Length: 117
Image 1 (tube, helix red, strand yellow):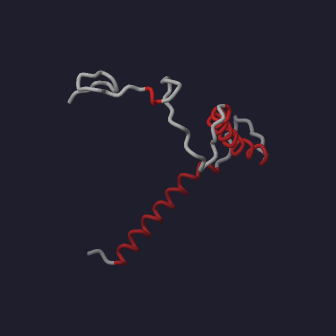
Image 2 (cartoon, one colour; image 1 turned 60 degrees about the vertical axis):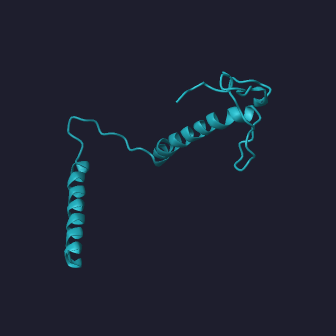
Image 3 (cartoon, rainbow, N blue to C red; image 1 turned 90 degrees about the horizontal axis):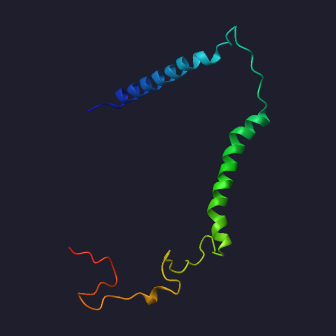
């Protein structure tokens, strides 16, 4: 059985190795711009905020509108906890499902796809 001390030593070694890897990989990020390249201008905080937060927020609003606006135009209630919409059968009879014929006998073709097992 593995002792508590061995477990702590192993976990500490893993954390230290991971930390060293992160620091080692981040080294090139602190390098200077090469001599032949132009020096880029600093980005303002407002511009960064608009890009990093504004675009995802705009996408969220557009998707929410694409989902809710058609239902609101049809007059459906989209509020959470609203009563369920009545039965819908897209492309079916407009007067309701009570008009559908059920099978009367074993030979009847009404009421389904007539699948046999």
